[in-house]
Image (cartoon, rainbow, N blue to C red; front, top):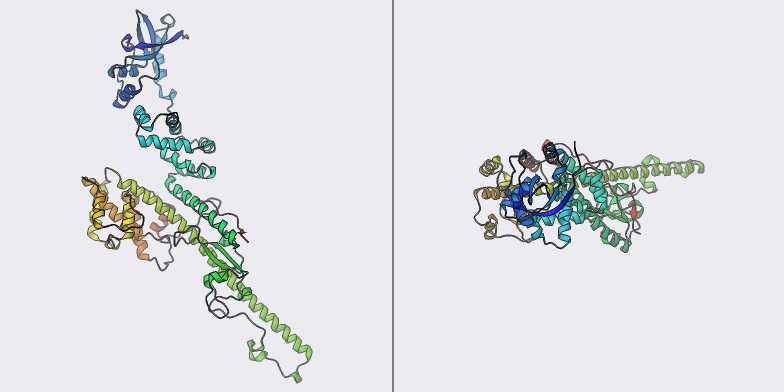
Length: 540
């Protein structure tokens, strides 16, 4: 029969406690990490003993803690002392099963561990001391503190609702960046479950940077009295890009001078060509009404008789009545209106098609930039490994011997060395060229053969990454700065990375399969960027 024993707590000398002869555990698994923790912190969870009289006690629970204390010369440990008169021998075995049954034990989740580590630091312990006492690295303590401090209650609610208890410290710290945006946290948690977290994180960071930059530009445009249309797809049907228009004399329009035009406005320029996410492009909302036209198109129609076919010129006044002349004039005016309407409709449809193409290219460029950032982060982790994948040395050798075009383009110049420095984790000025002597030091002192292989791989990786660097390399319509040859090189590179365990993003799969990019629907957004703001204009 099981009873609740009387108990009391005390600090006991380790030599007062003897092991339980009925203990079924034979391997105490006293690893160095556990022994070092006991030496640094002592025993924090009391052992359970039964009073045997004569100041001796038989151990019931805590054999590992007791043995580790003896090995590390800990003199006293806390104990809970049970009354022997209220014990049954069979309970020893039952309690051992209950105490050590994994189904009854639950470790702290990574977030709970982060909270504990941050709590220790916030209460005055240094990261170094916490690391020593817990057997963790200082960097881990710092990351844990960042994660715990960054995640507020809204983010924690999202995590709990998603039952995302397997998030590691790096993921938790990244979620803390978006603590003010629960929807972003929710998207990132979902992405973690589908193993696309890194790619999604790149997209969320890009979207946030874009929002911050555009908020500043929007305020400046409002101050300057310039109309801003948030979404190119919402522009009026007659709107045209300013760069595609000329004046009545056929001269290109000056963007600065056009600000005085009643139809002047700007939209966000999402081409990403110059890296400015807050760049704008000028448009005229009604070109024909403001005396502009598309080059090679005819000037606005007039009602002059000379514009009509010969058989529709005015007839001799003597042979045409006033009523007939008036009718003919009305017919002529109607035909001119129809021709003008048809021309305006054609121009509007062409402009709408260009805007749709612009929006499509914008979505593709965004997805491609996020994929590039994700891929390079994966490459940095790969190159930092102490052991190289088996296929790596062979691929490096074969690629050097074959000398494909991306490799032949290696010249130590700024473009490729900048990517190489990024992949190797070299801290250097963003836009400064490196010397040959400087680059030689990037291997590190006393580099191992594995490290040298990784550096060689990094050089080849920088060549391929530079080859497919332009944001629109994903496009199949072969823009001038891209060629099918570049896409072919990209396919080879991405396939090799996929073989090494890199998970291709959707747009990278399009490249590999030579298929068209599919723009994400606003309601689903698998490509990761939040939907555009509602179609509207802002400013004056």
